[in-house]
Length: 132
Image (cartoon, rainbow, N blue to C red; front, side, top):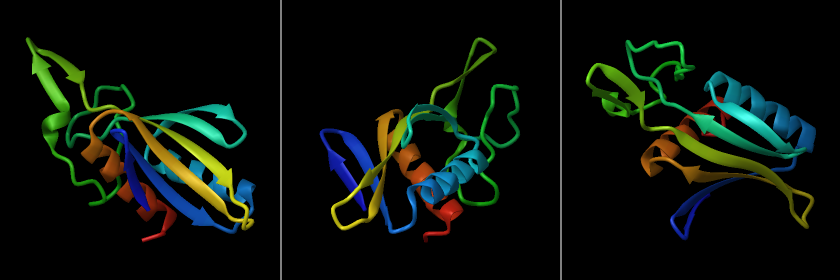
């Protein structure tokens, strides 16, 4: 499910698996997508993702999106007087919630960055989790 509330994007996944299993799979998927994260709580993380640009490697942790899962273009790099800067950084938060029905909801909330890149990230994340 995808929700847009007050210009924030929320993306929710639902599961009956054990929370540890869910978070293990989430971390594996984020690692495959080269997402950086900081643990805030046991089931809460702040994350940062920089989409890859084909042929650009500057040692700054630019992501590789394996295959055709990422539908972006070279617009994430802006050259200014020979100085290259990354402008399309997506920051988001991941949190796992328990529902009354003994299910768990995984919430991805965009905090900063282009909305369409966040949607690209969500699509790649789902594909990595093999949900689609």
